[in-house]
Length: 565
Picture 1 (cartoon, rainbow, N blue to C red):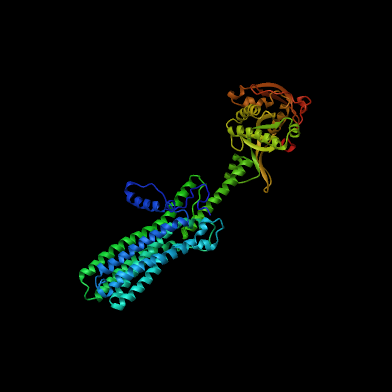
Picture 2: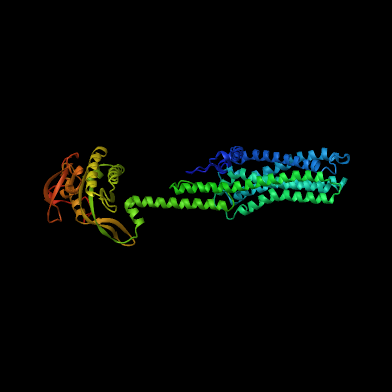
């Protein structure tokens, strides 16, 4: 499995990124230098194969440092009994180095290979199983078990060997090795958890586990204190008790022991608590950054789920929340595309009710001339492409002037200006859109000749239908006039007709582009309607296939009866 999951957000699962990035002030420079060192050390970790040498090298070095610390404790801090006495010299200079080499060679290599073998799925393309997820989060504990086992065996072995010479060696050996082993195990655990976060990210990315795979945040904090501060404090208590029971231990010897253990307690406590706090703060810092992005409107962010504690559940919950927001935004976008952005916004802001309100709007109809011949003469795919090109021009010009595409019906389009969003001069907006549409269709889609009719006036605008299914529309005489004018425009050279009332109600900058014409009686109307046509629109031949008679005998085949009211 590719450790870099695809996604819009940064998905680099390396500990360098997962440790968090921020801009530091000069006062925080020392802290950032330490963080940068750890980040650089972990930057190459992308999968289990590269984690193996880094972890192995760290544990080798830390164990050698632990051995050196024990030697300082038992030789310098607690000089009696003497570790270099002739009767025990063969143990100190012979058995001890051999055991260290054997522990490093056999124990460490075998255990590390066995632990990291459980992470080989990182480079496979097989689906993750619950066992794989469990192995990813048990790996730090299993790696911490390595020093526990090796130091426990070593402590028992050397306690027996030195104890055969003198029982006074036993408490000295047990105290020094046990405390160092526990502190070393804690260090190995926290380092392994940091280094194996890429594996945890991939494991948790494979699905939600059935149970929590790591201790809680409180458990992590408690463990860090116990192992980082509690163990050295126990060492100090034992040192004092040992000094009280051993009469030959001088005050200088006790002071030396305390001078070694107290700084060790201070340093180990600070380091363990810093690492534990760092592990927790990383998740919180990433979550805070992601929340800021969501707050600014960026929903293309996703957190890497790499923490097995409650913080991992929080990361997963955030991703689920953002996915829900993205789904909601997709639905809102689709809803706006279907009914219009303004209608969708009005539906969200207002409570639903059937009916409407009286508005002063401008209505335009666009209908293709000779669509039947176009459909029969061209392949269906090409016809759809031409229709979509024409609709794209209409939508662009109508939206540019804050109009609403109310509906598409076959090859016809109904657009509204002034509803549901009120307009200062819907007549001006509609007439400007009509002229722009006519010019662009002639230049960009010359294969499609379209007729356009526009009218304005008071209409009833609102939701029509039932509670189960309804739509936003406008109903009144201007709608009928625009539909009749659209049909009449098919016989007009300009292909565009408007009512004179609409032109007269528009702004002077727009009305100057129109010329008032004669009067005609439109079908279903019992009064004369004065026509107007644009001065600068391209002209076309009269379509005698569609309009075969005088304007008073208008045919309305272009739009279904339910669109012409």
